[in-house]
Amino acid sequence: MTGGFYQVKGQLQYDAILKAGDISLIIPINSLDTGSKIFSKSLKGGDFFRYRALSLCSLSFHQLAL
Image (tube, rainbow, N blue to C red; front, side):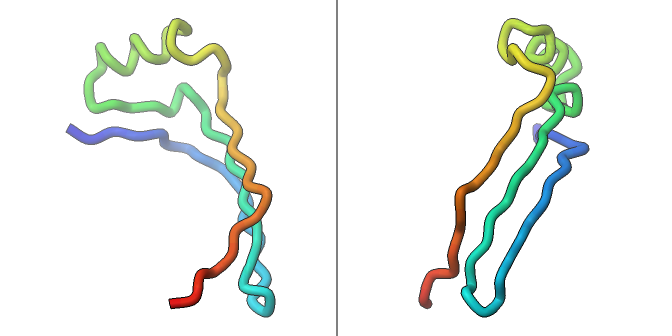
């Protein structure tokens, strides 16, 4: 069984010279699909997630030397 959040929207900024950037995402809870209608409905019912969307904002990221 696979699942995930769908309809995720966001913004990625990357500076190729500095090899660094940041990212922000908005993840709608209603886009959750666990692969099980009963489990998805239970998670989206308000007992697990208290808000209508999740927000993820990074302060920064950078490329590691390989």
